[in-house]
Image: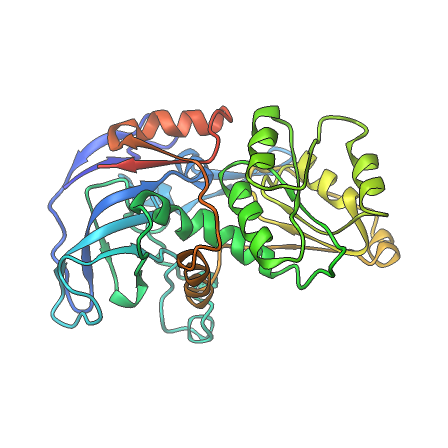
Length: 349
């Protein structure tokens, strides 16, 4: 099989040839038909997350190079291990990539995306920047109905990350507003799911006017440029004291400061993005403002099934998806770094 792989951290991806895997046990081999490019792939390629203050959190890909990224995978079943059940050769499926060890108490509880010994496709093991990928079990393969394979692939991270984060906000009242901070690929998914899950359309904030325009076209009730010094004051005025909750799909110092400033007393901020940096707030402000700041990491297999039911029912408008050949994986990562992508880019081998 041919793959676009990391051979040295931060260096250009290279085409790598390797034997096509032979599925064993319950494993399933997919011929990859589409693989989304996620901003977290940029961090995996770099080999670290930026923790702020010059501190970096190394990522595991450095220990097993060459490494094949790609965790938003759609494909066709082409081979089955002898114990594989639930799919047949020729089936077209998307792969839930957030796979754990399957044995620990976290996995047994259904939250294997929190497992301390993960086997996440494209993150800890080989993923979809390739023409084939090996999936440990057919239970991780989901039917995506009549939608395009390119769009379906994006729901396995971009969609699930947005859906899982919004579920953590709770249930807004009929007059409450939710703010989406960052209108990139995941943020656009967040706008769509917020429209389906909550009583009213969300607000959106970004530093890019093009993305703000796209957010309004996608259904955001209002859009604010967070570089504008009056934006926080305007949101507080427009929402009678602040939003019910804010989802930070960027995860930078600036975006989190903006999000936390816009929530009302008793509000909640959910951090999703991994851009990097540090954050501080005087401790007394937590009880005085009664705010909650927490994180969200993708979602469970059960949440993925719930999300896909919503999508297949036609309740989620598609985000913009651009397809590119697999050979442009490296260029796509550079475009993401530069902030030049609206919606999602999907690679097709």
